[in-house]
Each structure stands twice: as C-alpha cells, then as structure tokens.
Amino acid sequence: MRTAALLATLALALVAARTAGAAGPVVSYTITSGTTGDNGWYRSAVTAQLAVQGATDSDCPLVKTFKSSADALSCSATDGTSTVQFHLQFKIDTDAPTVTSATPDRAPDGGGWYSHPVTVAFAGTDPTSGIAGCTSATYSGPDSGSASVAGSCRDNAGNVGTTTTTIRYDATPPAVTATPSRKADANGWYSHAVGVSFAGTDAGSGIGSCTAPLSYSGPDTAQATVTGGCVDAAGNRGTASVTFRYDTTAPKLANVAVAVASRSATLTWREPADTASVTITRRPGRNGRRASVVYRGRASRFTDTELQPGAAYRYELASRDAAGNAQAVAVAARVPALYLPAPGARVHAGAVLAWAPVRGASYYNLQLFRGTHKILSVWPRRPRLRLPLAWTYGGAAQRLAPGRYRWFVWPGRGPLKAGRYGSLLGGSVFVVR
Image (tube, rainbow, N blue to C red; front, side):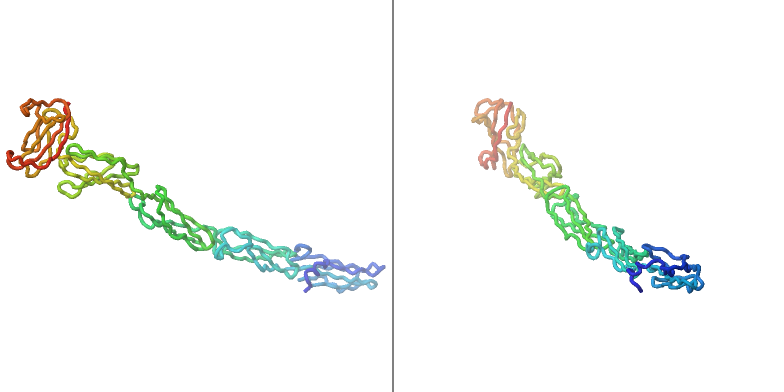
C-alpha cells in the first residue's frame, strides 16, 4: 500500500494527451457514488462511469469501482489514427484512525484518585491519510470510581475514531463527626479536661486518616471549641467542631464576716457573678449532730439563731458554680456567755439580763458597774435577772440612770454563805438612754 504522502499527490484522473496533430478519441468519467471527505479524500468506495467518444476501439470499462487508494484504472481508446491513454485513481481512506492513548495532564491527587478537574489528552495513529488532530476532555464530576472520559482523533480524510478511558474521581470531602469522650460534669459544663475524638465516612474514595483525639483543658469559656477533621484517599479534607461550656475555676466568696448578737450569728459575704449556690455547714450541728447544713441558697446574708450561750461554732461557707466547682471559706463565732442584752445594746428598766447556765451552779453573783463604781451585787439562783428601776446598794439609793454600764457574772456552788465561786463566766456592757 502506498504511503499517505504519495497518495496525496495523486490527481483524481489522468488522461493521456492525443497524438500530435490528430483530434483523436475522448475518454471522460462521472462519479456516481462515493462519500467525499477532507483534503480531497474519499471516505468510501468510489464508483465512476466512463464515457468514450470518437473511438473505433477501446478497452476502457463502462463502470469502475475503486475500493482503496491502491485501486487504479489504466485503459486506452483509438480511432485508428490516434490513440489516447487514460488513467484514473482516487485517494480513499475508509478506516477511522486508532486512538492509541489517553493521558491526564497531571498525576492523581491522592491514592490514584483525582479530587480536582483533570484534562485528558488523546493521541492516535492512521496509516492511510494520517492524523489531522485529536481532542482533549476535562473531567470535573460527578464523583465515581470509574468515571468515563471520552475523546476522539480525526484523520486527514475526515474519519473520526473514539475510545473511552476511566479515572477515579472524588471531589467531595468526607463527612466528619466530633465526639466528646464523656458527658459534662454538671449542668452542661465541663470542669475537668475532656477528650474529643474524630471519625468520618466517605462514599467515594474512603477515609484515609482522621485527626488523633484532642484534649481540652482550658481556658475557661462558655464557647470552648475543638476542631479536627478527616482526609479521604483522594486528599479531600472534611472538618467538624464540637462546642461546649468549660469552667475549672471555683467561685470564691469575698468579704466573709460573722457578727454575733445575743444568741444569733449573722454571716455576710460577697459572691462572684457565676455563683450558683452557697451552702453553709455549722459545727457543732443542730440537735446534737456533729454538723448540720444550716443554709443553702443565693443570698449574701444568713442569720443563725437559737445558739447556745458560751458555745463556739465553726461555719464553713462553700460556694459552687454551675459547673460543680466549689470552694469553702471557714469562720468562727463564739456566743458570749452573757448573751442578753447583746453587747452595747440599749436597755431600760424591766429589761432582762441573761447568761449561760453553768452545770452544778447553785446561784450566781451578778455585779453591775457604772463607770468604775459598783452599784449592784445580787445572787440570783436562775441565770437571768430583770433590771429594776431603783434599788439600794451599800446603804445608798441607786437608780437606772442614763449611761454606760458593765456587768459581770460568777457561778457559785453550795450554800451562799460558803462563798464558793467559780471562774468569771463573762462580762458585757449595755447602755441606758
């Protein structure tokens, strides 16, 4: 078979010249069938009908079909004087070119998968008319493990040949979930370090790897966020975050104070804004218990009543936030043995002075002073005395006049005449207006 370059030089028909000086016969042809292509080529067999004029003899056929470029017709016609040589041949290529390769313009993004648009260039061969050109195609989805990319090559005769190649394509990030390692410590708040793990699913290339578990341990915030992700085999990355409330700092009470008055103790404090509750525990507790919770709430003041005169108490104030963080502050309070009236209180005639009873005491000695002068000394048998308006002491008339008074009490045992006194029970002051 002649090469395509040689065939390209062939004329559609070649008719030999007449003998010089003679009219001679004429041979002509008409194409009755054939598909024209590009560049003077036919893409199918060509049938030609021949006509011979002015000849007495000719070996030219009436019809000739040419099936390939190699097919040729050579004949002659004569009128007895002149002879004409006739030659006819066509450029014919009925075969489509062969697409020999499909080459992506770059390497896969990961694991043999493409995750971004890729262009595939096609190449081919054609032994007859030669390759005129081949196409390229860009693939950008949908995701598929066997995505088809089609291309073609065209020969110089206009025949087109195709093949299809496949690629693996995944441009969709994996779906990722972020999961705390445990439940919140209290009321939706975490107060200790918490781990977060990440997992993913991918319907395309599959999960390649995920972020290793992360641990969150601060800072304190109502919007703590931990973010991680997963990468699929094609290199697509998906992320997920989990947001939670985190607080490891206990609310600390400030300005904690206790004031004792009569048989009560009033505790005051200032609490931070994030305090959820304050619990007060008293030792000793109520009804003979070792300890009792005497208050629980959100106030900044509490008064504990019905305390025992002369007893010492310890109060523990525990502040707690919504996350369960707690901190305690302790204060001590001692109820004076001389508890009524309260130290420094204003009184009048008829008011009761009261003090803590002493086990085994038969009587008590109460002494009253105005300034540095003793103005009263009495021996009541009960731990209380009602103040008179007037009385006599040391042979002199006394009166409960306005002023500042001090009073003291000693317990006595046995007969009054024996004068057996215990240690001073206590002293206090009051004011008369």
